[in-house]
Amino acid sequence: MLTTRKLGTQGLAASSIGLGLMGMSQAYGTAEERDERESIATIHRAIELGCTFLDTAEVYGPFVNEELLARALDELGGGARDRVVIATKFGFRIENGAMAGVDSRPAHIREAVEGSLRRLRTDRIDLLYQHRVDPNVPIEDVVGTMAGLVREGKVRFLGLSEAGEQTIRRAHAVHPISALQSEYSLWERNLEPRIIPLLRELGIGLVPFAPLGRGFLTGAVKRAEEYPASDFRHRDPRYQGENFDANVRAASAVRELAVRKGAAPGQIALAWLLHKGDDIVPIPGTKRRSYLEENVGAADVSLTSGEMAELDAALAPEKISGPRYNEKQMATVDR
Image 1 (cartoon, one colour):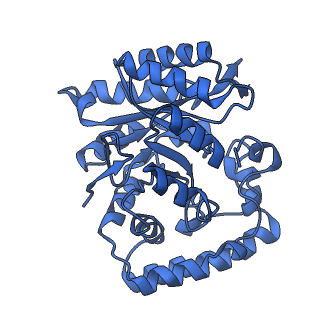
Image 2 (cartoon, rainbow, N blue to C red):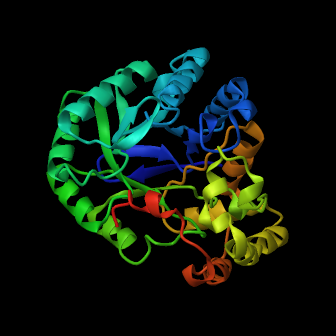
Image 3 (spheres, one colour):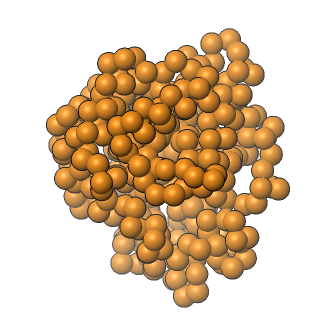
């Protein structure tokens, strides 16, 4: 059963597992495989199950993912908007329907937020993230603009995504940051040495995206070349060649423990995250109700300290082969 967790110390409460909406509009599978009715039904089922922390962004689509969420909430009616926490993001320049670099100039932030409010058909964004750090705009100017939106009532809480230590500290000094969204899972542990201790020092929650290793930790994976070119995994270094073989071996520990526990591998991966601290709220993405229900079931999986240590060791960073992004994508990460 899902519970409520606090993100930050400013009052933001979220369901202990959220729902990432990106895949409903892009990145995984092909356009032909996407089914808007099933995506909307998945959002409805999430709310029914208490999975009410819903993550979108202007760049997903672009733009259409926020509109999809708005349609789903409108169909439910009955005050559905007030039952959910909507997180969205700004920070990219979008030209001709595609990302064309980062842009966190204050004027652009305001333009982006007005666009998100319009597409979401709401008067406020519960959690607004800067999607990627813009090296050309001081973070003080970015957060100062975001704080102005809080004062105006258009935004409730502030977040950063894939930000580094100094950026987080400087941002938090301007206005409290409630959450950092970054990749974190059994598959990707780069936050553990320095970022997670910093978040706990400052009282900032962590929202891990790709908590299932982009599907790798579920065991239902193929080699990169077997995915269509439009699928993120087609160019994921960890899905390629010898990296794939090494990572299948490492991830076998998740599958083996799942068999012993009578759970799905993905549930073990999510339970590991939930056991890492009550300030962590993972947002596994799916566009189907069956996978959503499986993910939510992870909240009922209990892991012993011995099982946690077993997973930590089996998927230690040195056992994972290949970078998490290609060189171009890694350049957008503030580390």
